[in-house]
Structures are given as structure tokens and as C-alpha cells.
Length: 338
Image (cartoon, rainbow, N blue to C red; front, top):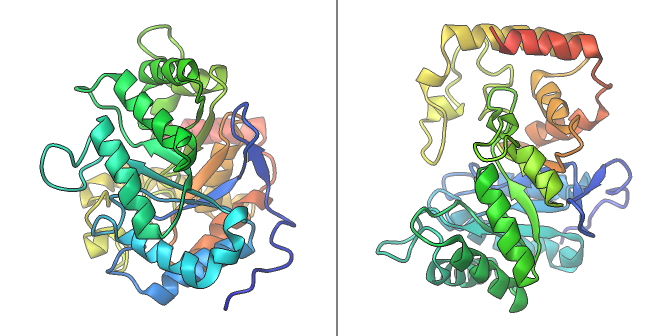
């Protein structure tokens, strides 16, 4: 039986999610890619337990994570039962619904039918009475935002989740969703968008009032937890000298893996330059990319994935980074704008 490290809270940094009372670790672990049935269970367990030993209290899932869909929740639920049950009150567990999960008209998107059924299924797969955060995984263009937010409110009021969140909503959609949830009496805790040095849409002005998504989340009192901080592996030294056979491209993984077309010579050139800047400041490129995101106080937490315990430890060690100088930030901007 697993016993957590006594010093697990000694070095992790915790940030408040918006104006809520909830603190999240600066580094959270996402179970998007490496926790399905194609991966080794003992390796998954080593990563998750190793994360908790380093103070990573937040584990992020969704109903469709695997592959196949649902498998990540099943594997995580097994670990909760076998290893982490005694520590449940020290964990923040999140899941989501909105992407395709089962056939027919009710297996995806943002209807009340889908969200409530998905929440029940997720709890059953993980063997939990509640999750800490339940998200609407994506906006639904064909369902009123009021219906989707009322479903989140119902899930929280029923005790099946402690907080409500949204993911992949743009600035205008976020403003509307936050207003509806506030009116219902269940404030939106957090937004989970994609964000990295190579994908900065959250910084772009919105179409209604010119405010970016990061501006809106701050104004609405919401936290922001970002996924794909390494641009799905591009912001590492993995692809500088070619495509390894064990990489996402090499394994041709489904469910969001990057493709060879995402690694042009121009892109590889930028990555090499960024990698040298990272080495010059005593970091790996992955560590610098994570630290670059956390320099913005509006970013509550960075969601990292991991296929090995070493990869996880490398990501967590990004918190030991020196502060960015104005000159270094300008060098990074110059490279990214090439």
C-alpha cells in the first residue's frame, strides 16, 4: 500500500483560482494522452503517485480521455481505490463532458441530458461520490448557454461536483457563461483553454469589447488552467534532430496527437533557437515553456502530461526557474515572430 511522501508540500507552489477559496498547484497533471489501455498500468501509477509525492494535488480528466474513451477514468479510479483512497481529501479531481463519447444524439455537446449522464458515468468509472471540478468541455453552438450552465449548476447542487468550470470557450462565450452561472448562484471557478508559446489565442482581443480571454477570466474572478503548454511536444528538445519512434508522431497516436505537418523546417528552426535560450538559463526547453506561462499571474496552473516519471519530474522542476529578464522576454518574442 502506497504511503505519500511526508515532504510532499514542501516545494510546490499553490495559486488561488480566481477569487475562490480553492488553491491549485502551479503544476497539475493531465491524463489526456498517456493513461489509456495502450499504456502500461504500472507506469501510469508511478507517474500519478510520483506527482502526488511532489505536491501535485490536481489530476485532470475527461469522460473521453484514453484512448479509448473512458479508459483513463477507469485506470485512475483503480489507482484511487488501491493507492490513494486515504488521501481523497488532499486531491482535486476534475472531469469534463462535451466531446463525443457514445453514439446517438445524447453522447456529446452541451445538453442537460449529456452533461448529467456523463457526470454519473464518470463517477461510476472512477468509483467516486463526487469530483472536485466538473467542466463543460466545449461550447455547444446548438444548445442555449443557459441550459448548459444550468446543468453545471445542478451537478454542483446535487453534490456530484464541488465546483463548475468551462473549457475551450472564447472570450465572449466565457463572459456569457460566467454571467449565467453567477445568476444561478454557482460561480464559475475556472476556465481551461489551450495556451503555449506557439499557440497564444487566449491573448488576442475578443470581437465584442476587445478584451482577451485572459482579461475576461481575470475580470470575472475565474482562474485559468492551461493545457498543451508544450504544444504537444514541440516545445521540447525531442524533435530537434528528427522524429523518435516512441514520440506521439512516431506512434501515430489518435486523440489529438500532433502530425508531421506540424513540424516544418521553419518550426524546427524556432524550436532550436528557443532551446538554446533555455540551456543558457540552465533549463530544458520544456521547463522554460512552462515557466513562461506561469510568469502571468492570471495563469493559475499549467496542466502537463507525462509518459514517464522522469518527464513529470522535469516539468515540476520548471518551478525552480529564475525570473525572466526583460531582455530574455524580448529575445523569445523575436524568435516567435519570425
